[in-house]
Length: 408
View 1 (cartoon, one colour):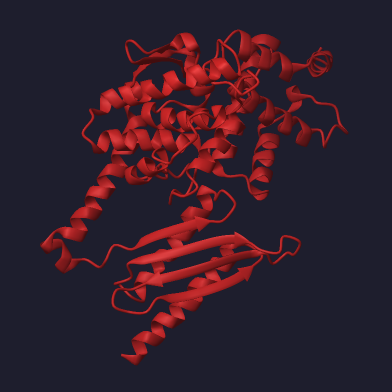
View 2 (spheres, helix red, strand yellow):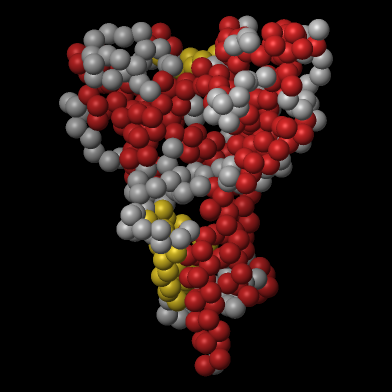
């Protein structure tokens, strides 16, 4: 009986059935369903060695899953990625128990890796204003549309998926409100002001003349819907002149929330505007505002000035690529050790780029350290990885700092 049951289970297209269940019965968004598809098909391919063996999730044990999770970590998957894959496995096996009669969930006892909670990346208000004040050709449909995309993301705090799904019917110029369809299939209203309303009117006129009337608010010049990568490219290009470490649509959402709280908005109001279920999700932005208050205090208050070293600011620029959060965290931790050699360091500038892509040693790091009333300390190194290049640079600068001490 058990053998027959396992054969019948393994012969079913279980992953496809599970994804259909998520999409049709639980109303999960297409993006969430795609993420589950990638995670589960990746697990299936690893389990079957690329299809050389039969796929039989009913025979998988907790030990098998732990070995797979361990292999992901060895291959360099981040804790966030591993955590998402574990959650996908848990959901899949819960569905197997309900719909396929599986007796136990081998994924139930998998431990979720702990995540660091880095503060959200945001664009400073003066930089955002500079971006939005850049001149565009108001007769060019794509230029006007792209400017409105950036403006609307920052002015309303909506998600990228909410922007691409925004309908013409959801834009109420009379009331100054947008109706967006957010996570968990929930709608919410977001107010906007006259400046954005004027831009919307102008865009709609251009769009109707260029692409024709459309049910969707944002479209391409041929009338087809936008896609996520197009929106990402628009935002990335617009934020290129800024100092933000990342330049994505979500960074503008972070900027919206940060600026609202910095200017005195009630946190519950910001939570509702963002469409957060829990207040704790919104509270991360208060950590940013508190950190800036703390830095202002340390830099300005006379009693604080007597007891502190200068607050060291680490600036990171990645040329022609998006830097990973893990690498940012690595650089910040490594830069902190420089304070042991000179407590008055004010700025550590790190520039990263890839050189000679055809070679192995193609990761270049340039580190410049500024100390008030002294010459800058600079080092440039090329290595196989950015981490190694940064280590070499910092070691060189540490030697420079020590030599400077000895001369005194």
